Amino acid sequence: MKDKVQRLTSWYLQNKRKLPWRQNRDPYLIWISEVMLQQTTVVTVIPYYEKFITQFPTVQKLSSAPIEKVLEYWSGLGYYSRARNLHKSAQLIAENGFPTSYQALMQLPGFGPYTSRAVSSIAFDESTGVLDGNVIRVLSRNFGLKSKWWENKVRVQFQNLVDQIVAHGKASIINQALMELGATVCTPEKPLCSLCPWNKDCFAFANDQTKLLPLKRPRKPITLWSFTPHLVEFKNEILLVKDPEFPFLKKYWFLPGELKKISIKPSHYRFKHSITNNYIYIQDPERFSHKIYSDVDKKNKLWTNKKSISKHSPSSMTKKVLELLE
Image 1 (cartoon, one colour):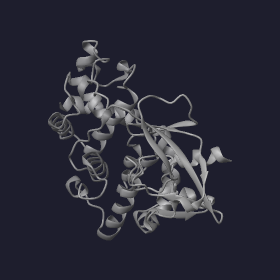
Image 2 (cartoon, helix red, strand yellow; image 1 turned 30 degrees about the vertical axis):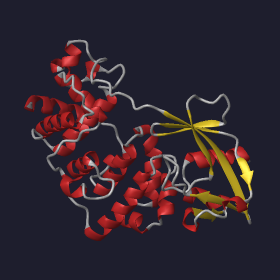
Image 3 (cartoon, one colour; image 1 turned 135 degrees about the vertical axis):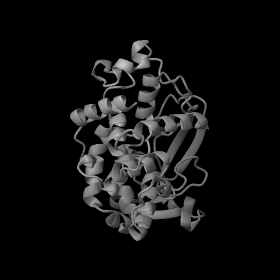
């Protein structure tokens, strides 16, 4: 194992990409980048990261900012619960300091096993392995692991393996090297095996099984929805609501409207929006008088002008609906 780690380390130090969050080992910057990179590619993240860090350069700045401002600068990245958890954790970290172990980090909002281990190992060199999709792919192929990696008991086995690998070197380097290898060489399609530092002892490469490993996770069924937005204006302001009946966006301000579960894709719609395993087909918006929403609980209603709407409802779906009305 030691030889494998040495080869991986040498490869990484010679080939690593120059990324803005790699300029130093500030745990705050590493944390923000790791959260943004969840469900999003590096190329997409970089401009959002740079804009976000310019606005909130320290954990203190983030902790003291209004949540509406944080959501505004998160707009476009989706999964807005990530931004809310960032804000909550920033307030705790600003008050109590940045935890240095993954066990302590996991007590904070939004810090799951991956993010906690990534921050503690990269920022503080804690000897713990990081397990993301890239690492799972590298390990599955190299060690010939034909396992259901998405099952909890199997992930424990993967975690134990990556912990063993990290124990043979510097955690901050090895974890980043494994993720970098999966992102740039051991890719899902058409891996560049000739460039891989582990190709001489890779099971998948030797047995022509890179297309078979890792095993494919069964997809969750897609739920289809039809949504007709309601534009409600009063005194030059637009109504936003929090609708507890929505299966998504429950905690977020959004345009009111009529939502229906459907069995087949509609023949007519203005655009499609995806939220996890939900496909939402947006219909032509309809204008309504504010009176029909007079019975909605005040805590679930918000009136705002068009200029400020993105601060309260940063979802790209809101922006697209409003563009339809212009």
